[in-house]
Amino acid sequence: MPRNPEGGGADPVGHAPQVNGCSNNRPSTDGKKSNGLEVELNKGPYGLGMGLIDGLHTPLNAPGIYIRTLIPDGPAESDGRLRIGDRILAVNGTSLIGADYQSAVDLIRLGGGRLRFLVAKSDLEVSEKISASSC
Image (tube, rainbow, N blue to C red; front, side, top):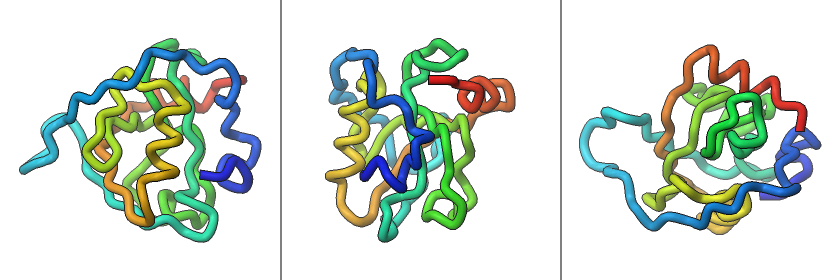
């Protein structure tokens, strides 16, 4: 996922991400999602149109990969189901629980043209803390 225009400078996590290692645990992706929403997206000419951030680098101060920005008219924003503050739990069945920022970005970048995300929807308080990040 290219940093520009994908992050457009709004995706500042390239510096000093928390390195926790990457978990190989796979969340359940069969049946109804009791703890998450499954969203499939096709990459556009500039990627998915969303910027990510490690929650440790936000006022939330909690580990996890969160959506920080949605680029207008990009695939993620156009789909309509993802919001700023939503937490990405898995990509193509590979868990991001415990993963560092760079591992998550690499998994998305190398995941192919159509990606399947398992997402935990955020509440207003989490969304505000993610969007208030100044890093």
